[in-house]
Length: 117
Image (cartoon, rainbow, N blue to C red; front, side, top):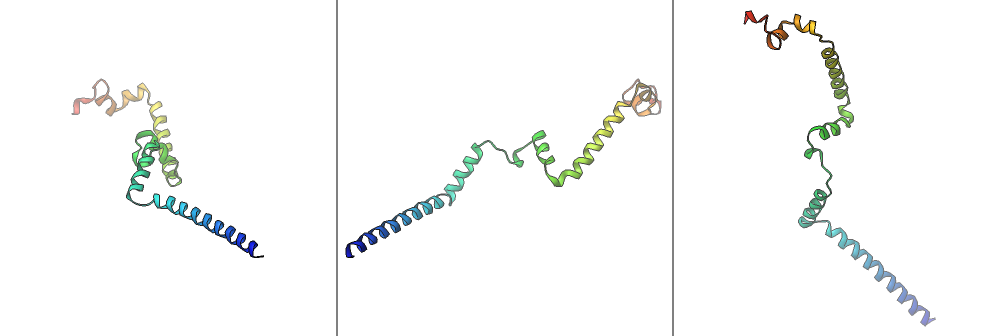
């Protein structure tokens, strides 16, 4: 019975020792993610990954990114409607309409109606 207790104690001692070794490894891993050096290292890794934040985007990628946000949906619907309306009006602006337009003939056309300037 005495021998059995000693082996039990040794097994428990080994189990506890292994547990504390695992905990120490976890603690060291967590501690490595803290502090100024860790933040610098994490930032460098993020920059090296090539993924851009919205602050670094420009032009069409930024516009596409913003279009994906649900809060911008009403604006995008209005923008698309306005763009479609403008394109439709531009396509219907024939040569006859250009000739009859005082603005067009004054600034873009032959200049026939520019006597009042």
